[in-house]
Image (cartoon, rainbow, N blue to C red):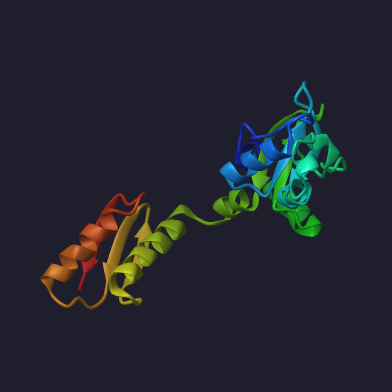
Length: 186
C-alpha cells in the first residue's frame, strides 16, 4: 500500500492567480485546512492555508489579491510511492494536517489528510461498531448494550426493557450505514 491507495484524488487546488477571496470560498466549501497551489501544467508551486487566507482577507485591498501574494512557496510534499508509515511520519513531524502527493515531475495527483490515514488504521468493523454505539447512546441517553461487529454483521447484547425496545434497537441498528445484518440478544 502506498500514497496512491490512500490519497484523495483528484485534489482540489487553486492556481496562483486565484483571488484570496475565491480561495477562501473553496477552502470553506470543502472544509479543508489548506489548498495546494498549482501552475497551468498542474505542478505544485505552493500551498495556502486557512490562516494565510484569513490574515490576507482581513483587508479589503488584499481580498482581491492573487493567492500567489500570500501562499507559502516552500511546500512539503510526498511521492505517490510513499508508504502510509512514511506519510504519517512526515505529517506528524512537520505538524501537517494534509500532505500534497506529487509525481516525479512535481505534478499534483492527490492529497492525504489525517482522516485518510486514520481510515486505513481503523478496521471497518471497528468504525461500524462506533457508529452503532453512537446511535444507541443517542437513543438511550447512556451506554446500555454491548456491540460487536464481524464483517458488517452487528450483534447487540444486554438488558432490554421489553420486546418492543428490543425491536426498536434492532430497527435503529439497521439504519446505520454499512450494517449488513443485525442480531439483538437479551
